[in-house]
Amino acid sequence: MERRFEGDIGNDCLLSVDTVDFQIHEPGIFEVGWSNRWWCHKNNEPGLRYEIGLSIIGGRICWINGPFACGLYNDWKIFNEFGLRQQLENNERVEADNGYRAGDPEYCKTPYGPLHDQRKERQGVRRRVMGRQEAINKYMKDWKVLKEIFRHDMKKHSNVLHAVAVICQVKIDNRQPLYSCADYSDFE
Image (cartoon, rainbow, N blue to C red; front, side):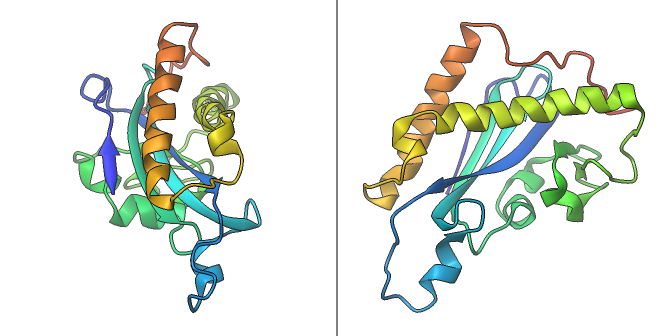
């Protein structure tokens, strides 16, 4: 289920992480409980969810995990039970949104967590980090095959998403980065 982009994960292990949802056709409408399993509250349609991790310093896509049924797996459950938490070293955390607050402060830094610096200048850095995360999500959803309801076999969705992620990374590598986060520090 999981695939990793090695990228610069070894050089700057500071990651931001978030999930992104994509619309799909209703799988197995005659299956008991199908709507609860696949229903995405963001799109109000059935969907698949992926977890995407970006290097904070380098801005590279370092982690893609999924697909997961939107109705069964929230952000924290994917992070905690399906891979990324197990990849973290001792005392290593990721920057995340409030969907990961169950892991704050041990594994995640969330906006209002106990160890998150609330000074205005530090919040600006955090907003840039998470803004870049959302920009990558948008980059991927700009592709028509992922923007619209995926009409092909659901098993192909992961291959399409990974291909789009590679193309997005190449585009970013050949242009200016989306946001500069060189002044990010986990220790302040």
